[in-house]
Amino acid sequence: MFRILEDFARTREPARLSDLARRLGHPVSSVNALLKCMVDLGYMEFDDTSHRYYPAARVAHLGSWLNCQDYEQTAVLEAMYLLRETVGESVVLATTNDIYLEYVETLHGHGGIKILRGTRRLLVQSGTGWLFLARSSIADAISVYLRTIELGELEQDEFSEADLLHRLAEHRKMDISFLRARELLRPTAHWDAAMMSTIIPSPPGHRPLALGVHGLAESLAEKRDKIADLFGSIVKSLGEAHAGSD
Image 1: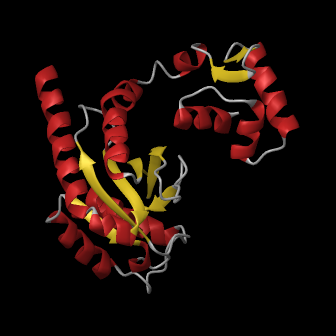
Image 2: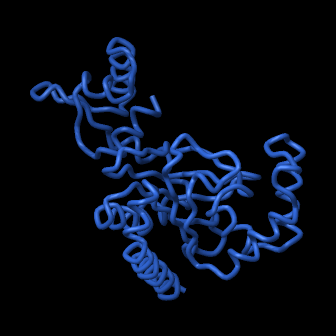
């Protein structure tokens, strides 16, 4: 059911049952049963003329009490759409979650490489994670590293504490990280991909956030200057918005 809602969040247009089932990779009968349930509960609308479904307004009220949504689903989401439409690549919004970097919003680009919302990466094994950790205290960063080792997510002999401190020293000098998948110890499924990311301003008390542009490394390298300029404009705009609301 959540994947159905995520699909609508991505396409932002009504859909037929067959199209939803095809995109989600589930049997038509299963998707049909879920949609009927959602209609009965008032979370989905069905147009008898076009035979298309669309989320009902009631869906928006489910998360209206979460303060983070006001900012992330307005100014930040608009910035993400601007990025995607300008550079044509996938765009992600990331935050920290214990020892992980978590993608809390994703917009798929035109290159075919997709990262699903909710996907996690180790903070100590991602460029975006190093940006976050580089802006925390050394003690906190090492604590995350040791917990990662303790949980068996990483072996100390393959990525030492000294390796981490070296990466953090590099990223303290950076506003933007550019990391190719093949540079990691355990590359993702997209061997030829890369991620370009930057931390963005957050309101007081809000969870930390970073924007990332993801795609084929060769394509991102060609657009690197354009993406960097867009990142700079977005960070400035979001920062000014906070200052104006104080």
